[in-house]
Amino acid sequence: MAAPAPAALLRGGFGPWLSRRMNVLKPLLFCACLIPFARVAYGIITDNLGAEPVDVMTRITGEWGLRFLLLTLLVTPLRRITNWNALGRLRRMLGLFAFFYVLCHFGVWLALDQFFDLDSIVSDIIKRNYILAGFTAFVILIPLAATSANWTIKKLGGRRWQRLHRGVYFAAVAAVVHFLWLVKADYTEPAIYAFLFALLLAWRIRHRRRRAS
Image 1 (cartoon, rainbow, N blue to C red):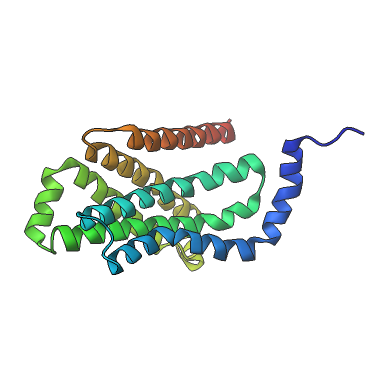
Image 2 (image 1 turned 180 degrees about the horizontal axis):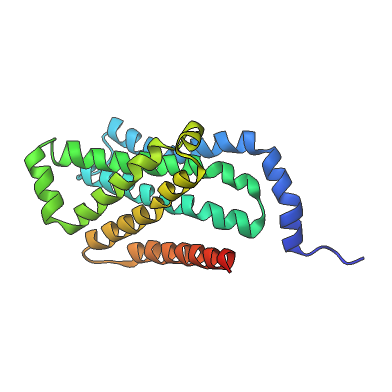
């Protein structure tokens, strides 16, 4: 009898194992997601963020906000390709962590860069395209985070809730553009994020077309 292919093992064996271990894996992932925040907090407490601490805090929170946003978008393709349905239980947590880091990113800019100066804040949003793009991503994510609880699905209805949460793709576009416009010299890192997002978007479009056909 032929040995099962590795793909079959992954589909048939790892998925159920993952589902059974999810109660342990989710808390571990939650703790892992807090590591970048803990790094910033530790740097503040120990005064170890370098000569430009505000820039360091802005960079770390912004980059991790974008990373978690892309990880959130990765969950569904990975779940469908591998048939590991338990991965769907991680999507909400990753999405909320994306919003958490974007909120921290915005908060650092608001409090430590702009010092809550409303005139300066409005002026920066209007005059600087990269700030406008980042602010757009933040605004789009607010209703998504606010409607992440199960009861909001019942209140809005499944279809309306799904349409609303497709806005995550627009938020990701704005976040990637924000990073691309922010960088002035080496575009390697934002280009990588843009490429990864393009792959995820292409998969989404292909999947919708296959379902429609």
